Length: 397
View 1 (cartoon, one colour):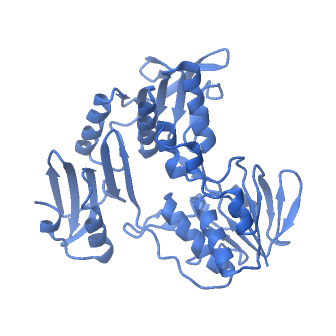
View 2: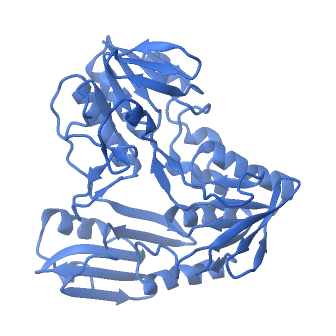
View 3: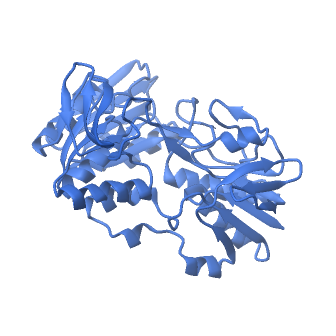
């Protein structure tokens, strides 16, 4: 049997490892359009901050390729899938046959269509290549002035990493607060105050109209207010979109912008599977359609896909999306829908150690939001997933 995996991040690694474990004789071919060795995206902020060496972010070394008997093609983009002939074609015109295929192409960062956006010094924060490009600004400017556009989770992690590295950081957000989709204004104020303590500027309620540039090099941004913010580099962290164009090319069914899969990660074609950021799942807590975008869940989806590719019916348990991170000396944990669920009871706790916001419906916990000390998160997560009656005494003194 010949298995082909397109992509080499979390979902692909999960697929590869499980395929080899279950089928020692299989041919496993892997294609990635990135030139770098496989790496863990979760470690990029630590790498940019100078808290991890580049070598420590890699996940699948050439030595492991040999042990696992993999044929890996880095820097090779797949441009076409023929789902009838069961072949893939590379950008170099080479054609490879598969028995089973897994699409694990992930997502790509969104860059707005603005004047000057193609200049040097304009980046995203999504890949190892992005991280190394950002680090080049430190070699060039010493303590660069960096503007980050977007105050979501990625934007705040990027801002924290760059400030720790010694950059002069400004964060621009079109909404009123940081993490506007996820947390309350009170929780946002705690984070914004910490940003100010760290010397990170925050500008809200402003959109970027264009990039200011000189001889092809970005030198700042023009805001909707007419104000110009000077910068040596500009980073856009305004969201991602699934890399589903190959699925469209292959005639596969989509669910929204992501690939539609069944509980075995099988697409609308019986020989093609998909996993990771490129697929659409149903979130367990809210029942909303979404892209999970977390490393552990992508790994799990890859494992499920590997079973399916071998004809083993192992169902995907689903994902309860809980965002957790740390920046500016604060830990943050938020369950999906914490800012949008309509509850019949809400509890708040604000102490020096943490800010806690809970939503309860018919005596059961439905969402939580924590800024600060997050040790109670496992208890809250269990209450939600198991539907246990909410016990205030377990989490609030």
